[in-house]
Amino acid sequence: DAGVTQSPTHLIKTRGQQVTLRCSPKSGHDTVSWYQQALGQGPQFIFQYYEEEERQRGNFPDRFSGHQFPNYSSELNVNALLLGDSALYLCASSPPTDRSYNEQFFGPGTRLTVL
Amino acid sequence: GQNIDQPTEMTATEGAIVQINCTYQTSGFNGLFWYQQHAGEAPTFLSYNVLDGLEEKGRFSSFLSRSKGYSYLLLKELQMKDSASYLCAVWAGTASKLTFGTGTRLQVTL
Image (cartoon, rainbow over all chains, first blue to last red; front, side, top):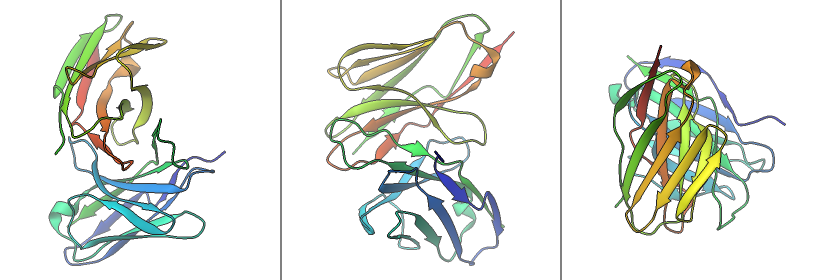
C-alpha cells in the first residue's frame, strides 16, 4: 500500500515564475491538505481539497491555488514566485470524514527554492 | 485564532527521559497530535490525545489536560535516532486542518 507521494522532490525556480507541485494521496483517502514549512518552522496550512473543491483555506494569497482530480490526486500552483516562497511543501491526506479522529498522513514533501 | 507554544530546542543524554511541553489556545478543540520530523523529511505520526490523561505507546507517552490547554510528549530511554523535531498540532473547529506549533528540536547526545 503506497503512502502519500509527491513530485518533484526538489525544484529550483526564479522570482516571478510559476510552479506546479503534485500529490497522490494514500489509498482510500479522499481529502488532501497542503502545508508550507519554512526552515525551522512548523507546517502552515495552505488549503484543503475534498470532492474536487477547496473546502478550507489558510492565510495565503491568491497566488496560491490548487486543484483536486476525480482520482483524489491534487496539484498546488504558485504564481509570481517570491523569494519568501522558498520552503518545503507538504501534502497530507486523510480518510473519509471521521469526526472522532483526524490523523493526516504526510508525503515526503517538495523542496522549492526560489532564486 | 489559534496559538500553540512549545520550546524551540532541547538537549538530552542518550538513555535519559525528556519531556516536551506544548500549550495551546484555540477556538474549539477536537484533539491534539504529536508528530516527529527528521531533518528534510515528512512529519510522521506519534500520538493522538482527545481525552484528558496519559496515552502510552512503547517509549513514547503523551499527556493532555484540556482544561489547562496543555500537553506533553514524554520520551524514555532516549536513543540517538530520536534526535529530530517534535511537532505539536491541534485539531480544532469543524474543518479538518491541523494547526502546528513551531516544533521542538531535540538533540540527543552521548
